[in-house]
Image (cartoon, rainbow over all chains, first blue to last red; front, side):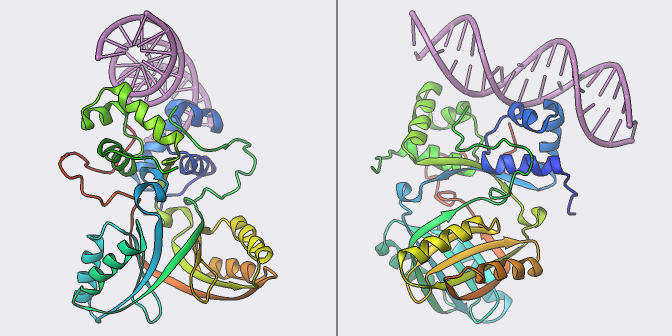
Length: 168
Length: 168
DNA sequence: TCTGAAAGTATAGGCGA
DNA sequence: TCGCCTATACTTTCAGA
């Protein structure tokens, strides 16, 4: 059910990806359509699951999440074990991403915690999941950058898009 | 310059992290403060860099980003080489995250592209950066979940927070 | 904390491809 | 029929007392 997106849809997605609070009015101006037309499109993008939500981006260090790490997980074969691991890591608030990867490891997860001590605690709880057979932790010394999907796409032609956001 | 956040600030951050478009009115109701008081707090959180932006979340598969991979980069020692790599990968739209990590590898980056063919192209360009000495790619077979900071925190007490969002 | 003005959002009805 | 437009009613935000 992959909708076909035209250039206007993509421009709206780029704009909302960069600034999720941009007003319909501003969007309408930048794509040169009327407000109702733009609202229509955005609602369709939401309904069709192209836009899956809107979120504030927070500075990790300011919300007790200044320490990041990737953890590779190896665990017993079989769907039951995998489901158990998924449920357990989903319950850990520090785990922000979980990916099933090719290769020897089964999962790679990204965690953000307040300190290395907190990382140790999280790691202890993960190692305590019964089916887990091993973990490998890679500490992040510095996050160079993180950005949302599409935000780096060239705006090719439409010379708008500035930055930050700030409510209104 | 780490601001001290009280429980109300944290509740606001949780709410905006889960739904970046929630209105001041709704937020005010959920934390039981007046609207101006809440607006005040949010503006301060933005000014102080706790909230660094607002973004729409997009379904990767629908925007030519259905294939994810992590790439470990090894490159020449020294600040000049590092700066060069940073600049080069920042120019690659497919690179969504870049982290300097402890261990043998220098950087770990996360990429999202349309296909494995596109991944090969991206990888070629990265390998072509002069100072790069080696890469190691780990393909993501399936992303189990991804979530924003704070979104998994228990709402402890305030029984609100539902979901998706959708403009108004 | 409240109130009025300004800005933004939603809905309806009509036009043209 | 579908997508866009104009016009109007409504909600939210914001500044000053």
